Amino acid sequence: MKRAFKYRFYPTDAQAAELSRTFGCVRKVYNLALAARTEAWTQRRERVNYSATSAMLTAWKKTGELAYLNDVSSVPLQQCLRHLQTAFANFFARRAKYPRFKSRKRSRKSAEYTTSGFRFRDGKLTLAKMAEPLAIVWSRPLPEGAAPSTVTVSQDAAGRWFVSMLCGDPTVGPLPATGPAVGIDVGLDHLLTLSTGEKITNPRHERADRFRLAKAQRELSRKARGDGANRRKARTRVARVHARIADRRRDHLHKLTTRLVRENQTLVIEDLAVRNMVRNRSLARAVSDAAWAEFRGMLEYKAAWYGRDLVVVDRWFPSSKLCSHCGALQAEMPLHVRTWTCDCGTTHDRDVNAAKNLLAAGLAVTACGDGVSPQRSLPGGRSSVKQEVVPPRRTRAAAQPRG
Image (cartoon, rainbow, N blue to C red):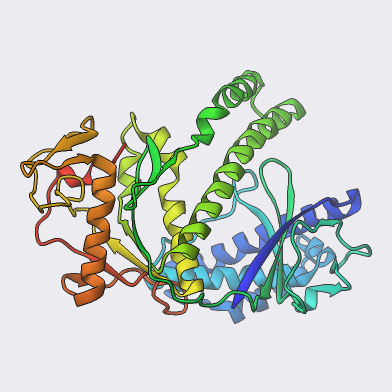
């Protein structure tokens, strides 16, 4: 199993300058190739592939205007052309939109090196065109005997430098089968509510740093627009606050998803339309801070790694309005109702009841396979989840977010 290991490193001034030049050249080559392919198609209905753009790159390097492309390693330039080819393949397969040009200010700064563009010996990584190895902070060891196949160097908006090494990890594989199954209901008051009755508090990382973020954004708004040094420093301070929030959120979700995957054989979640929910101005900030989509993505790939079953219930399934004891369906269930009593006399906690219903629906599908439809797949044709529960009838109230 291939797995990426990401580390932070601290480049010297010479290394930072070399990497910055490489990022700029990668962006330039990508935009030139995208413009050439777009022009060939719009004017001549001609499809230009990777081989043709690679030949164009050779010609560009021989011109006086683009001779500076020879000053950086050719490996990242070739890799960006391969990435453009993949972007067009996804576009023609209707998996993505048309590729966009890279921006100097907004696009991610990164460069990818294959085995011919770096040397990894005795735990030291040296990139092409560099005399000294990178000063990497080894926060965790690489798998024993692992040799990176590709290395990606990047710099985020906060000015931090990272290196990601793709290695084979023999420790990733199916875990021993275990019996428990769990239904997981996501929310805002509590980030997760499990069918066992356990509730996991929503840490609200963005709210914790909201004052610091607002102060940094006010300082940025007072700076004159342009490329001045003061505005760049203020922009970096804002980015650092955002990075702090994102890092804490990601760390918390990693710990939660790893624990759930290790402890349960079957996990049942609900397919929520997060993109539609963030259009609600009253809930957008809280829903974005909860990061439900990121939570689901982590569960999907970790379940695939460790041989667990992930069942995704359709978003219209009335999990909140359905009594988990007798099966009676309530007519309405407003968001402010947190506990309710069914006609059978059972008093329900809204979120726990929803998690129990999700678990029951997932186990029913696992047992008989009725009422399911294929779910999205991971690259390579591997299924990201086992199956999806589809109710016979849709109700509007079930689409509301749970708080």
